[in-house]
Length: 356
Image (cartoon, rainbow, N blue to C red):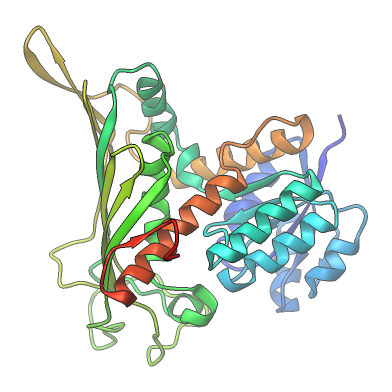
């Protein structure tokens, strides 16, 4: 079987995880890299051995040798590029979030259906080893019916600035950048129930806190301390049609003691934590047990997660194996994300059958 010829669109920081993973996959070849910044594209091409460099994604998509693409661009371009790639006959791995609106998500879904090509949404935490382990326990019924989950991803200081802080390009702040990961992780492990309603709040109180000294954090390449149009933090209660619920809070900045990530699920026969570390809660002989699996990674291994994600995408493209994160899931998660923003804007709960 010939190796998959891959083009990567967008040569920013997240592209390195895609490129490094493709490089380690013997069934993939990094053929082309595209970026508006030609110097950056050429540097990545030299680093990863890509044959072609483009500054216009349309030219890359017109290249008949390109069979699949990773889209690693600003959020506001995801839908446009994904639809163009599918219509050009390419398989697509698009970074999270799928896009910025539910309407865009539905347009991408329609393009997948008419093209017959693979589209995999970059829900990388689905591919983590601790997620795969917990999923086996859930699928075996060890947790019973999962009826409640709660998740937090709190940064005390962590607005990356640049395009992340520009609502026009990003679509939002911590909800769409961080929340998408933990919301999808819970929703996936809960069995992907249909969303019924969302009640949420977003806050714009602290900005990017450029006055803070002596505490470092990740900054985007185009970081500008004076520009920020996204929310600082948000919280939400998400209800599902099966009666289950999910509570979530996220922040780029908050007067918190420390950064925190926590993801917990509760079922009729047991419970589980997947962040900060994998832990199962069970009951045997009328005694409650906390069970810690003996595994290599109790928490999320970023590099291995991306490797698993890319390997899965390559298999789907070459062998027709269904993707673990299809476009339909991207649509449903966009309903939740947009529901959070809409609920906050309206100051009330919104239902998925008409408000979003």
